[in-house]
Length: 108
Image 1 (cartoon, helix red, strand yellow):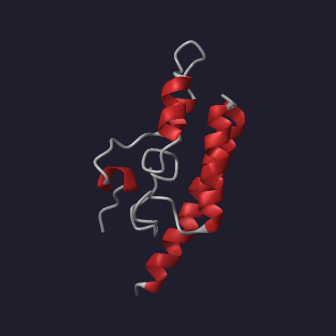
Image 2 (image 1 turned 30 degrees about the vertical axis):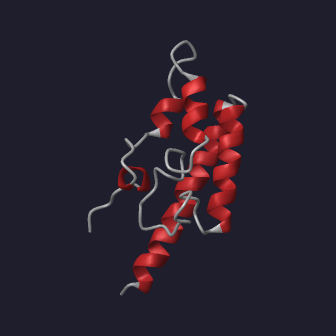
Image 3 (image 1 turned 90 degrees about the vertical axis):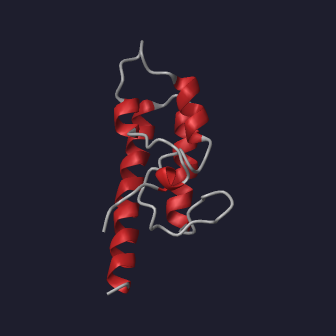
């Protein structure tokens, strides 16, 4: 099974948030990142695997834990809080893996 991000299914370029947030202070474009983080398609959650169930209109994950992490991620990016954004991003990755494993297990 080919893994494709939700962002790609919506015609958006996938974003490696770890790379973006690790850019040097004089290069990081917080305005661009705020805009990307404000949209469920291009946020950290949107850059997770497309098999995660989402609300069709917005792309917001159905999973309350994952969507809550997405909201927190946006807030940390909006505050230009790199450390907290990286931490929440890692939590998004962990929760996404859990959901993907559940989905794949159920499909067997």
